Length: 173
Image 1 (cartoon, rainbow, N blue to C red):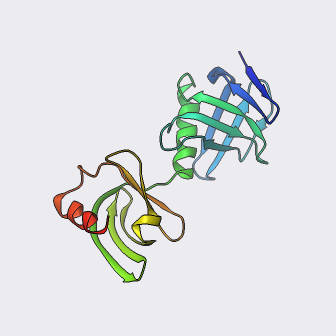
Image 2: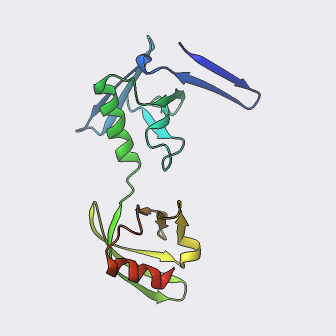
């Protein structure tokens, strides 16, 4: 059953999982969506309202021209193929590497740091402003780094880092 909440500034169309059919074409890197008996939308979009705290909740679906089709409260209840398709589309949209090891952090100029890290997507190097501008604490044991280009890198657990990585990180935080 569809529920609509009215507000003078905002109308939200809440979608029920059984209304949504999604298909992911990996070769074309394209999401196709259909809601209820409505038309099929090629090049559809999917975004998360809270990507850090709700990685599979409050999922907005949009048509090929960016028009909102509605919001799913959760991916639970979708058929397996649709859930897999939406997860693939979200994975492509929210590519946030998870740092597993810090190889080096060096100050290359005043207020600019060069980071060499190992992530779940391989080794990488990026530059950030000073920690005050580039480090965001997401709880007591997790941080998100933002580089000069606006890309994000997550350290899911400070305690989970090896001793050398923690030592390097602590010298800059």
